[in-house]
Length: 135
Length: 135
Image 1: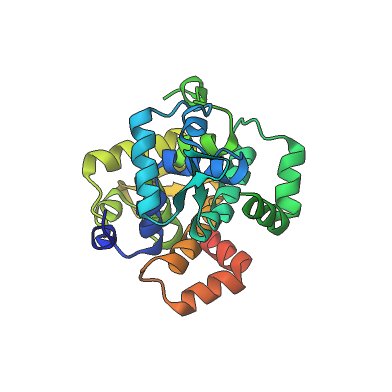
Image 2 (image 1 turned 120 degrees about the horizontal axis):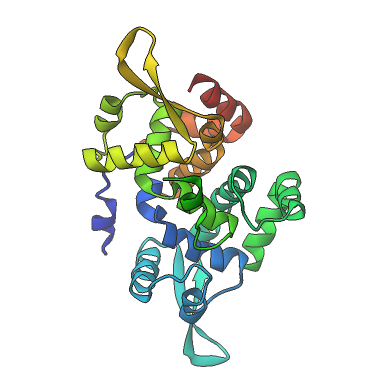
């Protein structure tokens, strides 16, 4: 995907643009894995509890890389192993994910614990900074 | 869709649950229309700049209603006209949308103006409260 192709959006509404860039649930689950779950390899993502199909995973990794949200690097400890890392642009999705988690924990049945939600609510900036720093 | 069907999620991770509930770009564009653009009818949504296909629109409206994010009511001024309104659960998606808009305005070319972004950044809580109150 070239930059030119990427810019042909259906509209320039900022929300629409955001949704065209990452607005697919599989894309955001990959960002979640990188940001909160210390998962960094293709195998890690494929093994996540939602069981993403491997063709979808490969497609979404390529799109996220083309959109500048993640990049690949070789594991310094094992050059055959490819690690995926978030760019600063990718890490800056943390506030979007946190608001989704808070909404979901409020209105749906989820595995989030009251302690986790309290931490995210009362110390939101600190929680986001910690996730970005560790990803 | 029954409540039972809705609860069969791929995982109970709160982010995954959120994405299963509204994680489709068309769904969030409908929420945007209701929250920020004073669009309330099928015709309004169909006329939005992204040109949603009518079969997709009908499907997403039914899903959002089943998920308790919006409801239908008859226009008091014209009983044949159906209006869509956000529930409190739907209005509480405002912080998610605002974070997406801020991210997009920061990293992508969009139609958002610097004044809009400043207002959303510096007075985020006020901006969200105003959007919720007017929707």
